[in-house]
Length: 264
Ligand code: GDP
Ligand code: MG
Image 1 (cartoon, protein in one colour):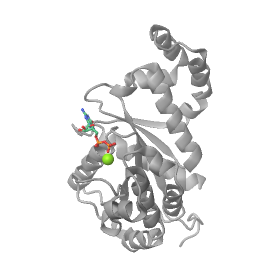
Image 2 (image 1 turned 180 degrees about the vertical axis):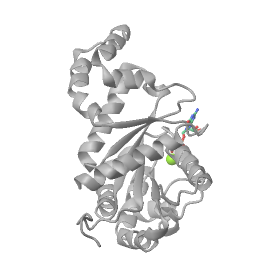
Image 3 (image 1 turned 60 degrees about the vertical axis):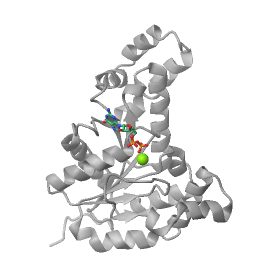
Image 4 (image 1 turned 90 degrees about the vertical axis):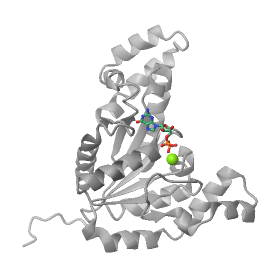
């Protein structure tokens, strides 16, 4: 009997996890760690690489943009530099994305997650038409979650922390999808300071006072404005290198997928 079943046309599975973050935050390493984790814990996952310019991947991708578009040839053919080449490759791939969605749909019963790696330079995916098309195609078919990877040791000063959070907030605005903040590299620096700053702006303000490089009132005002953003945000601390936090990550993604099912 399907009385009481949600009337949604969305499939419950797989959950799409789009991994974004600043260059060097550890997206690819994190993806690699997630892949090994799924294999050892019988989670059924698919990995998709959307970075056309990556030379070698530490994990085996089930779907790889490089199989469809040759980035170097795109650069030559259209007379482009590296960034233009990546963007144009992504555009070309986006025009065929319905085929990718079809492929995932046919495998839907066998999959729990599709983990998606994005180009090294974050704005190529988050601020491009093709990035929006790809995100939209996923989100209109499956529960879709954005995992925003933060380089925790590099965000330990209040000013860099603030600019990273503003970026995360802009992604939430742009995608309107559930966002998980993934504090990576906790083997180098624990992320407790970040949680403290998000929970209590007075602690953040105290940290600002001791940061003589930047004591503008703007940062203070912004921290107040971000309170609402922080409140609805899910966070998890991980280390892509040691593997710490992987179970917590998947739990958080599940909770976000639930949120997606209720909201969209
Ligand atoms: P991407 O540009 O976001 O894909 O970042 P990469 O995965 O290529 O990683 C950038 C650098 O950060 C590499 O040197 C990684 O070895 C390093 N890295 C990634 N994750 C971690 C981590 O959890 N801990 C530490 N210590 N280093 C990491
Ligand atoms: Mg990468």
